[in-house]
Image 1 (cartoon, helix red, strand yellow):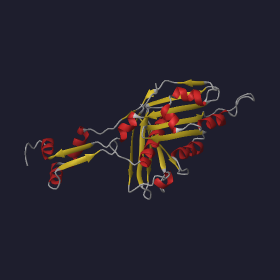
Image 2 (cartoon, one colour; image 1 turned 135 degrees about the horizontal axis):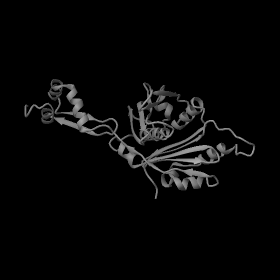
Image 3 (cartoon, helix red, strand yellow; image 1 turned 60 degrees about the vertical axis):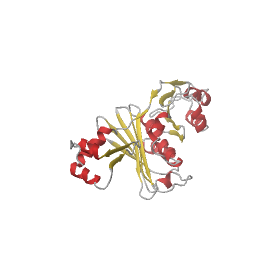
Image 4 (cartoon, one colour; image 1 turned 90 degrees about the horizontal axis):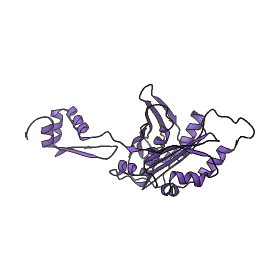
Amino acid sequence: MKSTDTFQRFLFKDLHIRGEWVRLQKSFQEATNNCNYPDVINTLLGETIAASVLLTGTLKFAGKLSIHARSKKGPVSLLMAEASHERSFRGIVNYQGDIDTNSDLKTLLADAQLAITIDPDKGARYQGIVALEGSTLSECLIHYFERSEQLQTHLFLGCDKTGCYGLMLQKLPGHQAENSTEDTDGWNRIVQLARTLSLKEFEQTTNETLLLRLFHEEIIVSYPEETVRFTCSCSQERVSSSIKSLGKEESLSILEHESEISVDCQFCGAHYSFDRQAINNLFNLGNIH
């Protein structure tokens, strides 16, 4: 049975290459079902979320990793995806106007830079800058790993209406061929095979079958699948606290012009509304009109 909403590691034992799968279907739909994004925006967000979950697989400590960009010239003013070592994620994208369905990453985020921020639960925050040198997110991240981390990397990122998907391969750092009989062309061979993977094939096939189909001649160790979930910190209680922080006078002043105070969560699209009675109850005003 094909797994959904999972992260899984694997290792090419004799080639010193590590790999990771991520497939987010129900969780990605949960994250976006209130947002009504155009297809190109939905794909951009999905690929960024998939990438953030893949990159948490490189963390050696408890914490979060985010991919973030802001653009003043492109139609996408904000792009952000955040994932944690606990395999949870959230994401947001803000855009203006009609979006050309053929727009690439450079067009959508004109004159922007991608930032990868690692935020440990304990310790100092670290941030790396990813130049938008490629037309896709995967190309930009490959360049980042090769230049900043000196890690040979291959990334496949895809997204459609069913969900978002990702594959990352990396040559393990610090390993050099020890003798002339070692397979020195292993990395190139594995990447060439991985490049034959299509989004449709990824969507319809299990990780186990994909490994067998793509790399049937290799010795591979697969690790257990881990469940990935969408999490959003918004709640009725947190929104109520935010309104209380406005103060009674400010809240009642808004109701002089509006029938209710409305708050929409940017991460999950949830809508919260507070009419006059709800505001009265919030500030213990009884049934004051």
